[in-house]
Length: 245
Image (cartoon, rainbow, N blue to C red; front, side, top):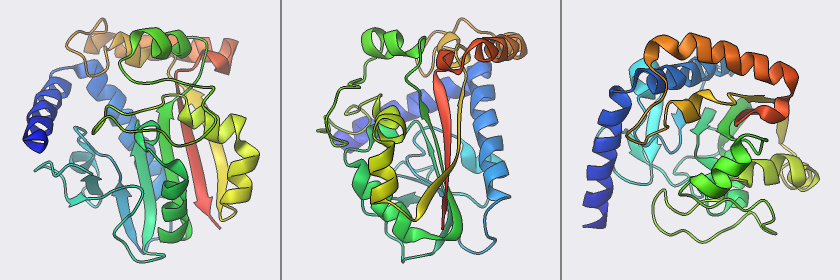
């Protein structure tokens, strides 16, 4: 029954995404980043998106294997980020969009990424950023957990997509960066790029409402770029790209 409820809710969210042109354009930008990352990866191996959920990456990148821990009918595989069902050195790219902060044991995931990626393969994480705009939103107006003071990279899950720590990307790659580099020496961070101060929030995310019509998305993008020129700490999201050495 729980899986049926998850699937029903996901179908509703998927339909909502299709009806929100500004949010859809945000996702299309993400998928363009996937394609760009793939161009820097070895040609051999599988490219997979972990935690695909209600996204539509497969419509844009046909070769991409889509996956989630819930067996949604529009996805290719069931995959748990903490125990991926692949042989060692068989993946050329792993993509995560707003997923890392839901992974209840990030160390196990990074162990798996280090094991499964081919040499030269890449891991692209696009997730929430602990910035000046996003922090009050994530702390007070978001339904998910947000604890930048968490001592560990683990947390208890309250169920699919509900257990989370929105500060986890910042914890791992900024606060605890030395710990990450020592623990996963084969995963080298090659790029961290904060972005998107306002667009996602104005589009309402996956909620019913939106303050950003599709025609205004380019103007909102220009505003975001202007804000980032003032300070990258105004960002709400971050791209983190790693390569397997």
